Length: 240
Ligand code: NDP
Image 1 (tube, rainbow, N blue to C red):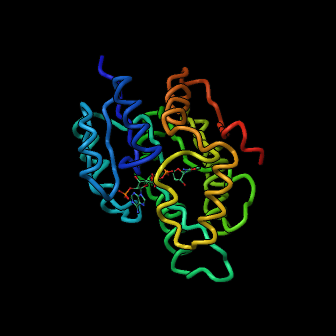
Image 2: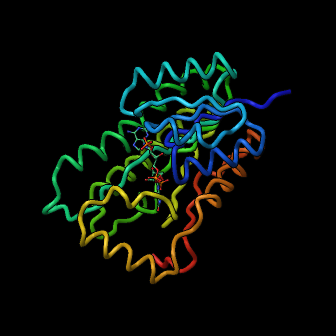
């Protein structure tokens, strides 16, 4: 029997891309969403439908999910991963950077949940993996609004876990520390960027996105009545 559909947002780079490769290697059909469609198509994964979707666009998201489900059957696993980190000093930062993080990391996460939750409760199965961060557990310098959005992901995950549990739908949150991805490309504050990079060098670099992807695959492949509620994983030398 063919395996069920996994939806991954932010699949064009970093953790989302690594997840796409890991889940494809394990035989899952994929619905891959991000704005850079060519990057997802360049992965040349089997049974992967790639669509250019901005997670802030609720209508486009719903249309892509409908198209993916028509082709591969219902979404069984969601890696709600798309996110942006515009780190910066909150006293001097352009508030439009706050708007952008809130739109993608908070509203975007809700939009994805909206597109899949009802179907999962009706089918009485499904797994939602919300991408938070260790910055959703504690605060860091120049992470003010980013932390706010990731605390949001934690709070929403806790809340919907309770609401979906009676339907046997699993809600997991994953909270990585520093991971080697393109995430820093979005930081415009040079001081913040320098400090972040120096700290990263000090701890010997971030962990591989592939390791994060493998952890999510492991958690997903556990029996449906077993839920790892949270995975918090960091470089060993990331002490806080
Ligand atoms: P990347 O920048 O490599 O990947 C981010 C992904 O999100 C890209 O595929 C990007 O695709 C997508 N994305 C951004 N904005 C949108 C949007 N509006 N609509 C759709 N897709 C969007 O970074 P990471 O892989 O590191 O980030 C993935 C997640 O992991 C984020 O939620 C991040 O906060 C989280 N995280 C990262 C950590 C790290 O150290 N790297 C640590 C902890 C958590 P495109 O631009 O093509 O739309």
